[in-house]
Image: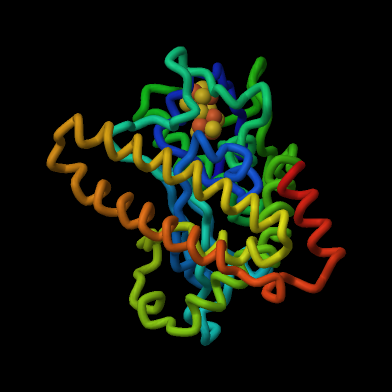
Length: 311
Ligand code: SF4
Ligand code: SF4
């Protein structure tokens, strides 16, 4: 059963900010001293007509238009994993932290987002809608999110159009698509900046990706993205060097805090972060040796990217 309408009554309690968000590369560069970056790689399954999506009391049986819209969006945002039936891989620049923190590092102690005034990440602006799924089944996303925020003690995602709540969906229509469209546009622009290059490297030996179950996640250091961006221009290379320096400092202080907590369940995360630090150190050396001839010869693209990263 799909509710006809949905609303959001957000009082900015911050309860849904229980982990670092997904970021665009531009957002990560701007918030390099707030978020440790990682790359999260996931399989995205093909959808089929007649498939039933269910989330906590909300269901949708996919029709041909649902599947066509999913295929079109997935082709725009993700990368095909070989044969058509194998689906796609999504590569997300994801903020990383110890799960024991159970909060986004940008969350203030009064529950407010410290980035609110200067600009929250686009993925947060779109919440509770999801830019990665077609508009026609955002109601299923809302059903799942309603249950997850209820588990955190919030009752902000509500069925029906309610007074003093922001209307989200009326029928099958998303009422205000601006935030999800902005986020999709940013992700599409950044495909050619770094995600296509990272995907090409990953897909050159796709064994590990094909072994990933849909929904499972592989996490790696964000270094391949930085190495792709650094090849755009000298200014981009310097921006990447600056980000690497800041990330090494952030990782070092995060690991030092974890060692002081002496929690055995955090050892695997500490090991992963140390791997990130090592990868950043190697990337720093590689960028120091990067010859000018390795830079893109496309001056228009370089100017566009420099504007994007500086904007
Ligand atoms: S849990 Fe709900 S009310 Fe609280 S900040 Fe998130 S969306 Fe807003
Ligand atoms: S950046 Fe702000 S809105 Fe986004 S998860 Fe963190 S605290 Fe919440």
